Length: 544
Ligand code: C2E
Ligand code: MG
Ligand code: MG
Image 1 (cartoon, rainbow, N blue to C red):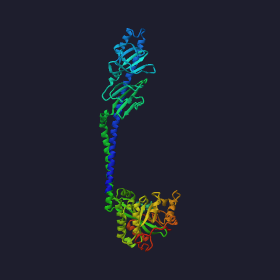
Image 2 (cartoon, rainbow, N blue to C red; image 1 turned 45 degrees about the vertical axis):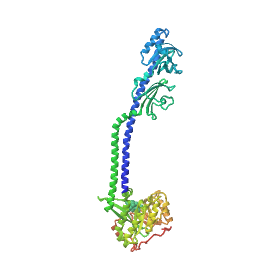
Image 3 (tube, rainbow, N blue to C red; image 1 turned 180 degrees about the vertical axis):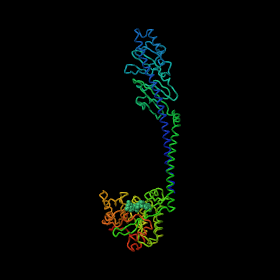
């Protein structure tokens, strides 16, 4: 019961976790999409800003061309008038001037140029243009200007005027000097690191500043002295994310519900398969067939192996390979094994009282070999059939034994009941042979896969020989499974193997068929000897 709920809970939990995945994925997609869209907007603004910067730089070229086109002194009344007209045609340029070094000789606006504070030395561009980036005007302390000078002609620009037309809520902008990393113009929140030549944003068109929580677009304007930064807080995309989520999330939730539904269906099917098997156990739909075991030397039937079958209500018979692993997973194997022992009692009690020396093998699962209940159930079976009636063998596969010390106690207790132990399907499980010496096995059953290759040219044809030698050196009897031909029977008999079973002798039989089969294939009174009562002697290395 516990295991049933564990399986259902595990499946539902997995389903719920899986169901969350599409929702999380769609939320993440919505955010990614919103970020992509916002970066595209910032790119657009940065491109406009860049165009403005380039246009401003070309103004100085135009001024020089117009002044050079005239022949008289730049500071003549006509020259100054031209400079004034030039300034009036631009929104960014505050003053045009003619300089001798850093001394202004004449300008479009002497009130401005008389009070000019040039600040630190200029940066010289490759084409010889001087850029004074921290120019101030005495009396207007809060404003910072840029002065571009070439061939003595200068333009005083107010860069904040460049970015003002693009200012928007939640968007910060800045122009910076790529030489100094200083801001030439700025609007909104800007980090110094974004302008720095070796800052984290340098060399990246798109930069996500997780420390400050900003998305940053940074460009260097050709020829490379000025850069633009446009940034926006990540938090500002929340509205956009929620708009996207409006579409993505329902799809995610829907996908999640589909996954959850599938998990629910699977868990239901698991539970219903379990309920079906439980029903089969309780309603007597499990039954046993018995496959005769032969003495290869005198060709007589010495015993039989009990093999379980499940008859469905539609009449179909299911073999154990299909439901034993499920019973093990579903925690029902103890009930199945208990039912097998009950069936042995029900089918064979009368027969074994008449043939007390007849051998009966039952297969137990790894979990049975861990359970202290198993020896008790076997003792109950012996008691119900009658003391000394039947020689019993428990078959265990290798997978139930490896690294499980608790199996040893159970196996010793079983042997203490006078029941022999056999390793089933030997050679098909794990490669470690240590358990052959750890556990008190009496019989080694050679798997039918080796039987089938023994008389062939196959690479595994010699494995059977090695297994026979191994069993002999450990003092164990060998039994060969799956003998289908006379040739195979002769092969193993010649190698000293005493017992065998397989279709050559008989397919698994119903109980009534077995009762008819045994007298026809054994000597009179062959099974009259009662089984030894009490614990078996310690296994000693003896030849077969
Ligand atoms: P196993 O114990 O090795 O049983 C031998 C299997 O080989 C049986 O299949 C049998 O029908 C089949 N067989 C016998 N002779 C021949 C032959 O000449 N040629 C071929 N090709 N096959 C042959 P089955 O009955 O389907 O059982 C399969 C396995 O299911 C068994 O292998 C055993 O491990 C397990 N099993 C059977 N009954 C029980 C049970 O009551 N409890 C548990 N826990 N496992 C069982
Ligand atoms: Mg078996
Ligand atoms: Mg086997």
